[in-house]
Amino acid sequence: MAYLSSALHHNSIYYARILRNLMGLLEASCRDSFYEVLPRGVQVWVPEGNWGIYPDLTVIAGEPLFHEGYANRLTNPCLLFEILSEPTEGYEPTADTMLERSGNFSACRHIPYLQEYVFVHQHNPKVEQFYRATDDVWELAIYEGLEAVVELNLTDTRLPLSNIYHGVELAPIHTSLGYTESE
Image (cartoon, rainbow, N blue to C red; front, side):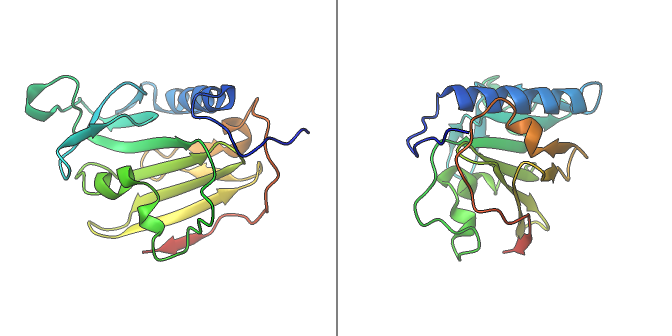
């Protein structure tokens, strides 16, 4: 297996493959259910900041709800996915700043409907799943290695990392299987 440089870009073929794979897995799981999977391009309205973001994938439960009636400002996401383009130097998810993984998550965790926020690394088989334990407490589960399986709390969907990363050339990683950490 060839190894990639750390300069992977958001619009790389690997990003596109991960997005396609996630969309397929979620669509297969959520089809004919209460949940709807929406691709990048749908704006999620963040009331805390009074602005919108464009997650890579958004899952809603039931009918879409919109901010002030604008059909491009979704207010009821229950699950968001972000595909990370590059590793963050020195990032340690168990550090005091683990909930500051991205500016988007810091603001989005205050969206009342949001229950899970999932970061998918593009450079190695690693997924960080933040999920709401109580109104003010988010917990973290980390999954690493192609044998790991992400279990979404909200939709009861299982996402094998081997399927998420199908067709993606991966960089070497330090393997340690998932664990859970509280805020």
